[in-house]
Amino acid sequence: MTVSTATDTPHLGVLVSYLRTEEKLILANARNRGIPVSPLFDRDLVLDISRHSASANGIDVDVLLDRCVAHARAGYTIRAFERWGIPTLNTAESVFICDDKAENSMALEASGVPTPRTIIAYTPESALKAFDIVGYPAVMKPVGGSWGRLLAKINGPEQAKAIISQKLELGSVQHGVFYIQEFVNKPDRDIRAYVVGDRVLAASYRMSAHWVTNAARGATSMPCPITPEIEDLALRACNAVKARLAGVDLIETQDGLKIVEVNSGGEFKGLMETTDIDIAAEIVTEALATAKRAKDKTCAPAVSATR
Image (cartoon, rainbow, N blue to C red; front, side, top):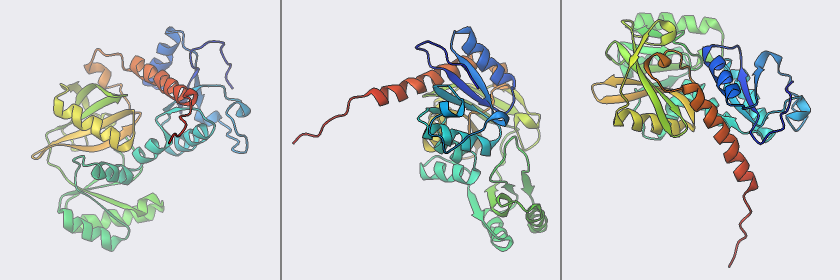
C-alpha cells in the first residue's frame, strides 16, 4: 500500500476518508519538509486482524495521524494500529471518548471541567423526566455525530414527545439513548480553541444568529484572543479526554466559560482565517513527536528493583 523510505525520519501515515483542505495542507507540509508521508484512505483498508503487524497488512508507516471523518472506521483502525505497536495521534481511547457525546460529557464532569448540565435517559418516560429536571428550553443531541447535525431545541413537553417519537422511529441504537442538555442563552457565538500537544495554538469566535454556531452550519469565524481562562479550560478539557490534537468548543455563560465538547482532530479551515499560525505544520510536528515518544519509551532501559 505504501513504500518505505530509507530515512531516520518517521514515515507518517494520515488516515483520511477524503482529502479536505486541512488534509491537503498537512500532506503538503510534510512533503515540503522532506517527511515521508502517505494518505491512508479508509475505503481502501483491509485490516486482517489475524496478522500481527501493519507490514503484514501491506502498510508501512511509523506513526498514524487520524483525520478520518467516519468515526467507527477511525476507531477500529486506530485500535488495530495500536495493537501492531504503531503510535497514533490521537489514541484509540481518546477517539472513543470524543466520538461519543455522553462519554465526552462524563469525562469532562469527572475531571471538574465546567460543562452544561447533561442528563442521559433511555426511555421516553425517563427522557421527559430529564426535560423536567433541566427545564425548557433544552437541547437534545445524538450521542454520535458532528457538524451540528440532528440537534433539536426543545421548547416544551409536546415538542419533546414529538422529537422523542421521531428518534425512536429512526431505529438506531444510538438514537435510543437520549442525551439532554440545558439550553444556554449565550451570545450569537461560541469559541473554538485549537489544541495541539500542550499548546492552545489559536482560537476563534464562530458567529451566527442561529443557536447552533457550528462552522458547518454557516457560522463565520472571527479572531478570539486566547485568554488565560480559555487556555486553562481548553487544556484541562483535553487532559480529561486524553487528547493531544483537538478542537475544543466553549460557550460563554453567566457563570463563566463552559466546555461543550472536545472534538478529536477537529477541523481548522475556518480558524485559518483568523490566525497566522501554520496549524498544519504544528500538527505534523506533533505527529513526529508522538513517534519519538513511543520510540524513546520502547528503547528506555528497564529499571531493576533493588532492596
